Image 1 (cartoon, rainbow, N blue to C red):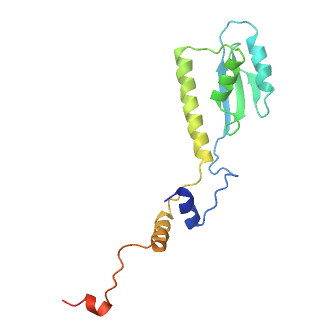
Image 2: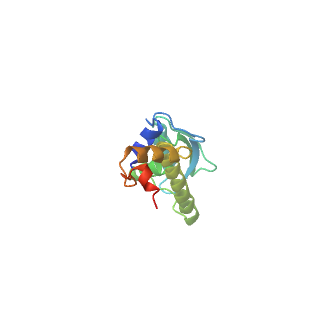
Length: 151
C-alpha cells in the first residue's frame, strides 16, 4: 500500500505547510576560518550578513564567526559550501572537521524529519482493515451456511 493511500484512508491531510514538532529550528553555529589570507573574516561576515534570515556575530576569537539561522532555510553545510565556493578558507583541523560532520548529519536528519509527513502510528491498524475490506480476497466460501457444518 502506498503511503498516500494510507493517509487518505486514515483521513489525514499532509500539505507540508506547517512543520510539526518544529522544536529548535533556530540554530547558532560557529564557523572557524584559517589565518591566511588576512581580512577574509570581515569579507565573510559581509557575505553571510547579505543572506536574508542569517544573522552574524563575532566568534570567540578573531578567526571565527557565529551565525544564527533557521534550519528550514539554511544548513551549516550549505553555508560552508557557499563560503568555500566564494574562495574563503575554513579551518580544516581534525576536531573541527569531525564537529562539522556531526552538525551536518544532525541538521540534515532534522530537516528530513520536519519535511516528512506525520507517521500513522495510532491508526495504522484501521487503515489496513479498511483496505482489506475494499479489496476482493480469497476467503469467500460459496457453500450455503447449513452445508458448511455438515460432517
